[in-house]
Length: 465
Image (cartoon, rainbow, N blue to C red):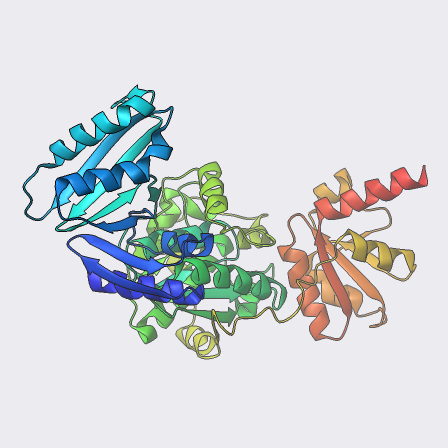
């Protein structure tokens, strides 16, 4: 593990373009490099690092020389402050660590505000190794965990939302080599967002393993789960399909388990009953590191680690909001059949990205307020509200038409393909799916969410007044 950590530290610093030499010595790792924020960041995002300190490296021949060098280095730091001294010693010496603490404390005490061992303003730290000493003041805390590569390979089911990247992060922290699987429902829009999120995660935290992102087209699953599809329990069966696709890909990769961002009770497919039935639908272990976390905790953790998506289109369960099942039995889940041939064909057609070539293929292509304004002012755009009838009646963009996803292609078939179509739903995923379908047929379609559309409506209403 120590050799792996040296390797991963070197990779991290190299990725940050920091020339450095890394070595290990009796429980410590020494990195010789320029002191800068970029070096700090590279080391503090390497799993296995518990803490780092920038040190002054000095040699000495006697206790007296060590004390004089220590005083010269630390006197400015303790002047006028309450201080404590911590000395750690390795090797054979004619003095004890306690001797250094007492004598240096007596030397620094007159220029300080006194010794305070319980809550000092500053801590003088010295590590003595044979004839060398390392002086430092501050300790920065790293992520801890184990170096990536010290455990086996797993496959993370990533959704483009908030939970799954954080779940992958926790397994990476335990030394697991993580690859990623994304089942796209609105390509290229949701794919671009997920590729960007994946690339940020592994570029910052993935030192030690060249992970890959596999993108599978989920269109066949949407068709099977729709109102006219063959699945009876769509919200849970869709999740089973994701598991089955993950299992098939994991077997090809030699992965030892699937990682998900599921948390008990968070959405309809994640009740204890549903998770039990789902876990029995595959023959590979499912790892759920967020299982007991609240959504607020998950969002806070993801934000702190910069794992939030550039745009959150919502979860796949929004497709099945009208008819979810919350307590499915194993027999009921098994009655919704997923063809092995379909799973194999979807996995075989997967696209592969890595962090170096996973560039965003185009802008996220959602209709922001500026895009809405340009298209609506032209007088040519049609606005389509893809939410439920109830939400449409509560509020909708003036002049918009309420069309559900299953009816969309039939409805727009009467329109000229050159006409701008602006689709919106509650979060963006359903309208992104609609825009994806229409673009493939040559329509000029954009998508947005209800909040952005409503903000634009209120803005233009105020302007008109």
